[in-house]
Length: 418
Image (spheres, one colour):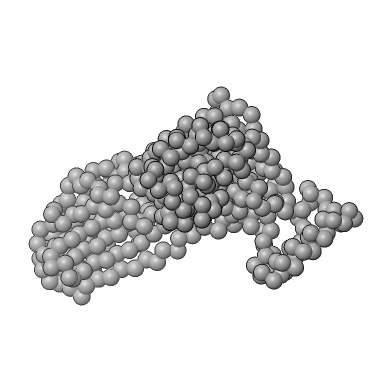
């Protein structure tokens, strides 16, 4: 696979290298029984001096039946004061890489150097004993990180305050919701003054206010430690990360500036989405299309968007809910515009509906345009057009998508009679 390496701007005031990965690889086996046998053979092999392999050639070794590379040939460095984003599709090898960085599993190829104290949240509830209380788990985690009881005592109040679960701190962890576990885990990991902080999808659970507080904390920590952040939320990656590493099927396919990484990620997701174009027309509709260039629409984030829709009717139509939706690479509707109030009664014949959206505040990437037109009784769907019309958004900004898009104007022309 081709590796895209984008030049990145110099990072001022960044210190020593705290994380260095060189040609890191990890092999897994799909079959449990074979995995146990291979593991036993490898343990015996490591004890025999005559069977030692050249570590530089480990990534070239032939896989045994059922084995595959979960990670292969991954190399990068993270300095103090830098935040590295880690993105990729589900199963790309992100969590496996983080587990090797945190020392939970051993790499089968390459080497990893970590300098300083490591704080990590790699899985929900990881590191917590479910039968111990939240307070007791704070002391256990602190002791694992090498802190004395006095040092933990000094940090305890700040941890409880940040987590916002003071009234439950003396309850067993097993009674916590997933959001409460994330709150306490994040508070512990970030309050122990780590030199290296590893976060894997920790903000996928939790309310908006807590996520905002976490973003501020990550911003503060990234000035004095090395941070690796894994997230499928592109706004989090763009806000926090100086550089971003993108994995694809266990290999590095991009390493460079975050803006370029996210663009590359969105383009790949568009290719992999395999969204099925479908169009549902009521029997009273004889024709429907969105007038777009063959290559699709393209605009800068924040610009106006003009759409023209042609609709041929056999019967008159009283518009009900009428939505224009924007679907991202995940197949999720991230923004909509409701044009119902702008549509008059449509008589039989061909009509052209010209729509101007005042501001398309979408993040960079590729989208498809949905059109859904309902009759005024809300029981009859006239048109449902999904994933047929393409929109590419570019620019340097990564904005939160407004669920309701402002409409500048809508004009309806009757082109012919039925």
